[in-house]
Length: 442
Image 1 (cartoon, rainbow, N blue to C red):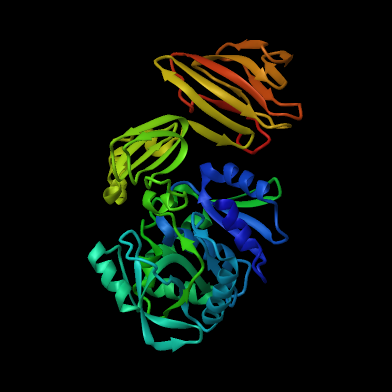
Image 2 (cartoon, rainbow, N blue to C red):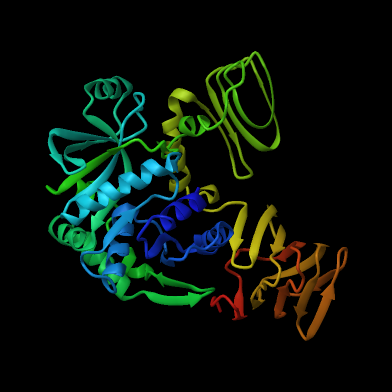
């Protein structure tokens, strides 16, 4: 979906730059996704957050970053990376209408004409008596209502789904932030002043300082600005939109069978009706159950009733409060050189599957508390192990004692895949000293 969003943004007429705000740990994965999608003619750049501080911080950081090199009349389009847009022509027309309004000094939202009463979305109440160019003045924003209220909104005809997409004139946005959210503007500005500019792989990245960023309010752009400003307008549009904001919404992307079940993966069922099953790793069987959401991933298994799909956020909250690894870490982690997957993690040992892309290289590094045993499954490995330099093929291996400098490289043209067995008193990811790294991490 981030590929589709990137292509959608880059293909719009008049776009000179696509600026992505994302988490520092997601940069290399995101960059790989963009390269797979194919680079456009416009410039691509990144702002890297050390941790999330909601949409007000992200949008303000982007605006201040652009203001340092663009004119105040520059039009800024904000697109969340996880939205589905099926009608590209309708989207392009909506952007043109929004840009026209933004150039007149309005903070513009994209309002989606509702197709059914959806309690999982926020709503915009439009003032249909106050038409402005191709849009309308916004009366108010409404958070996710209950089903009965959502039905009333649908029947009234003057409520739209809040898409979370925006269009601003850069100068107007900064002026309104200064007026309504000065704490956000000042704290983000201080964070950017202490940031580091990184370059590499043809990308320019602004890595935000974490100490200053801790002081940035954790608030959405809706609460911080849009609900307070008197300059908010909406462009109603029909663009085949969904924010895939719940598993119910996600399930609609899969065709139902004769029993109403929507299945992704190998699924067997008997007497089961109207369920959604996503299980790509192993066989799943459902017997005599109805209206369930079953999502099985390498990280976790979710079983929920469809009516409670939105309540998964409370489980996420519990994971966060208990500092559970599942809240912050996947089993498969992306790195600039490839990926690693933790297969097993026990007391004093860890087993990983490591994939290194052709021509890529891990850093020259050392561990104080663990030794490593590398076994090549496929491809060719160039290994630095202390004073030795080795070329290893499939079924060959090497042992790296604790304290030895070592490096793994892929000199070939196909993926290198190895199994790494770690053992020692401590096998945490922070036991690493980098001496040399082509990705600037040393």
